[in-house]
Length: 231
Image (cartoon, helix red, strand yellow):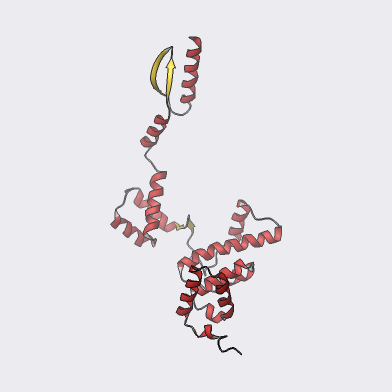
């Protein structure tokens, strides 16, 4: 018997985590798979990182039911792994559907699959989310935005603490919200600028004509054409 066969089992959970992260960074998938195969399940489930890569390995190997069972059974505390496992959870169910029906589910079918197979509490806190932001956090941001569209850094840090989001999420949310909620007069000004067209009405050359917004644009062009033809 090779005395080094069970050497990996002598590593501490933190040492194993470091080893796994190095293998992931160097993209040494074969070595990582061999390492995971040598570990006992009791060792794997003690560390979120090990558990995550083991479940990921099962999904990549087409063991979708095993991956689903692992996700449902063992609680993951690290939120970044929870988010990635939510994606794996959905993809496993999509692939099981494909195996059964011979075709990958379309958007409506995927939506129904997600409704039928909600995330287990091992990877979800039960709080509904919208675009990866919990709805309670979104309400706090919406309430603040109604009074202040451009918070300073101190206010953003306070919002990040209240919503339990990171600063980049808060920054991105406000940036996207401002882009979607431009003032009405600013939007109308942009439309008017786009509708400025060259025109020669009645034989006298004019520099520009500011066309009316919306359907009026088409009417103005038609009226100009009729006048040119009559002359």
